[in-house]
Image 1 (spheres, helix red, strand yellow):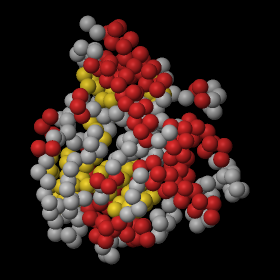
Image 2 (cartoon, rainbow, N blue to C red):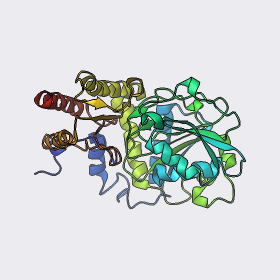
Image 3 (cartoon, one colour):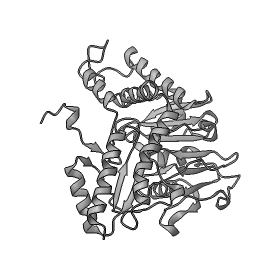
Image 4 (spheres, rainbow, N blue to C red):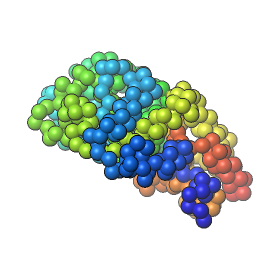
Length: 370
């Protein structure tokens, strides 16, 4: 098998590390040995060099343009994934304030974020979807915002349960903090409604190893000097994310993806339309399959990124995954904590891949439905 032939690639429905745009991978392949103008690989050049500084600034500027980020927000390129942000958020925004942080718990990742915040200060579950197994989101009437809270934390898209906020909750003057790891750059966002938005890269923004944090300037004042340097947002902002050696290849790849979104996709409005079209193909199958495919999330709360569902029994799910793999439909097994099937259809998943999955789902149902 020709390992560098695009035709040999599977359709990768993994939740992350996830599919990346083929044009980006091809450019990385061409430039991996020698980055143009450098005489060396991106993995070898100094993060203080003029060549890397140009890549670094270009990535920030493209991100600002894509999301229309106001000047009063800083962009930080960090490491450690969202798991580290689960701790850095309360360390910087809650510790020493004497306030409570409110968490809206819509699934597994929101719960994990609160567990880490509990170690840093007082927290409250503003809403918890446990009663219905995290198959829906709260309505506005269910959220009693505490105007004195340090912040309100949400997970915009829960990859395991497959629920997604279509709009951010209204929190008034309380900063809204959002883990946007799994739907980052999949649609436009009104950044002015957020205090902090963060995302690990390995869903929509590049390889694992890079974490993007967008934080409003005034919130940097809460970062206390007693914090270890790497855990202090203000330190990173003052050093333009170069206080330590950053994830240089991750920033390079992220810059290529933002360029792809701008120049090949045509911006986030177009990306949203593409993602909605892909998701509709699969949800239409769920909605017309009777009881054969059972979606986890309630229709009004469905994720455009992670389509989660079950089949009538474990034996059929095993057969589904086995037959899908033979058709080069890969990474469809649900998260180990819940089982079932999960199709992650992030930005870089082509329509052709989703169409192939849709057709397979219909065929499989027709052969196995009673």
